[in-house]
Image (tube, rainbow, N blue to C red; front, side, top):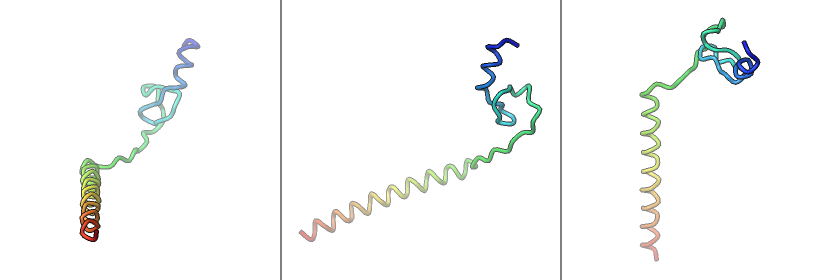
Length: 71
């Protein structure tokens, strides 16, 4: 292998073991477990954030309305 190809491999991450320095087809390591949230969990998180934003918006509108009644 040429010097250029070896230098390029230093920046390559194996998709199997997630280590740098070799290609997936050259890997002799074990596959690493990579925890990812389920799609249901991702959607629930987005929904929760939207609800939180809506509640904050409503509470600030209510506070503004109450302060306008006082003055």
